[in-house]
Structure formats: structure tokens, C-alpha cells
Length: 304
Image (cartoon, rainbow, N blue to C red; front, top):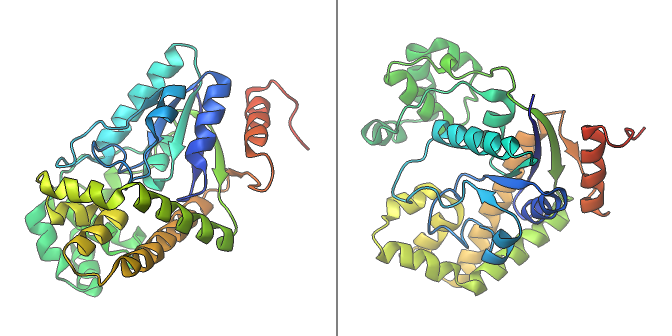
């Protein structure tokens, strides 16, 4: 079974920098696991790596789709499999690096997926319904999915109804036998430090031109609806540009809260997987990651 190192973490955890350093050290290549970095033009808002970082290690699945396109989980999985297999075929070690939990799980677990495109008309109808009606509708169309789904998650309920309405059972998308021998390394920080890192990163990206980036997307024809669906930075800065937020300080405050909440959701997702080895952020994460990888490869005795 081919080997795959996964480096994952929350927003502002430092996972991208760590992934680059470790992949560079082992002579490997990086496959991005970020649902917004697949899109061209989403740079500062998605926290995309810089050209200088990209020059150090070859990256895959960044800037592979137009922002106006819908890039599905199934498309991502196929492309990631292809990239990982290609890297492995050259004798190099592939590194899956990112914070989109569903992308990572689709690769690590080997999900079998049905590729159902979004139905905008159906979604518009469903968005107007309260949660109990969404649950009832899914129970009628796909009882098995309704029994397993998080009934408080509107987005997942709508997607499950969408799949069922297309004539597929949601059970068609289930965990398959893992395709790779994976070592998962996780990186995060205590909450108070992570909040500081999120705020600092937000200030830096705003100063670097994140508002101007999103204004440019709007002037280039990307709709406000599309930007809203991209979430977080794209949603709140679009609201700011429309005059719906009273000031730059208001933008910083509301966006900061949203990013912190998203980081909490990321951590909740990752903590469900007991196989993830969490690195101590207060030490030398690079050295610790390298030791773990060598142990996993059988080149060092395992730590007690």
C-alpha cells in the first residue's frame, strides 16, 4: 500500500508552513487539501501559499478551477488520487496538507462518492425551510441518511436532499477500504493563542490587500451570491463592500468571530479521528514531525 503523510490543522495553526518544511526535507511533494485554494483568484482570502513558498516544494491542486465553476468533492478526490499516485510513482513521498476535513477524510478513508452537481433551484427552495421541515423531507426521501446525519447542520441536510432528489441514495457515498497507508499529523494551539494567531493573520491579510482582491473579483464578474457561498473572508468582505457593515472595525470584529468559530468546527471534525498524532506546538514541530515520519517509515525505533 502506498504511503501518504497528512499534515492537518485549523486555520492559522501553521500547517501549511510545516507541510512545506517537512515535504522539502523529505524530497516530497504537497497535495493541497483546501476547498477554496482549488480556485484561481482566491489568494489572500483563502490563505494560499506565496510564490516563494511554492518555489520550494511542488504543490498540486491549487488554482485548478475557475471561481465561477462548481468543484465537487468527487472531482477533488479523483484529482487528489491522481496526484498522489503520480508522486508515489516517481519514488517521492506525497504529503496531503490542509484544513478541509471532508477533503482529507475522502482521501484517508477512501470514500465512494456520487458526483451530483448542485441544483440551484432546489437549493433556493430548501434554504427557505426551517430545520424540522428539512429533516422531515430527508426522512421521506432517504430514511437511512436521515438516521445518520447531523440534524442540526443545515448545509449537510440540504446536500443530502439534493443527492436523494437526483435519484441516488446517500448511502452510495460511504467509507471504503483505505487506499493509502496514512500517517496523520495534526497541529493546533490552545484556544487563547489560536485566537491571537487568527487575529494577527487577519490583520496581515487585510493590510496586504485582501479587500482589494475581493473587490477585484466583483468587478471581474464574480457575483455576490457566489462570493457569499465561498464563506468567511469572501462573505464578510463582500458585505462590507456593499455597505452592510458599518466600518472596517466592524468587518474585523465580525470576520474574526466567524473565523474563530470555523476553527472550532475544524477541530471538532479532526478530534473524531483517534489516529491523528497531535504535535506539541510549543516545541520544535518540524523535528517532531520528521521523527514521527521516520518511525512510521521504519527508519527509527518507535518512541515508547
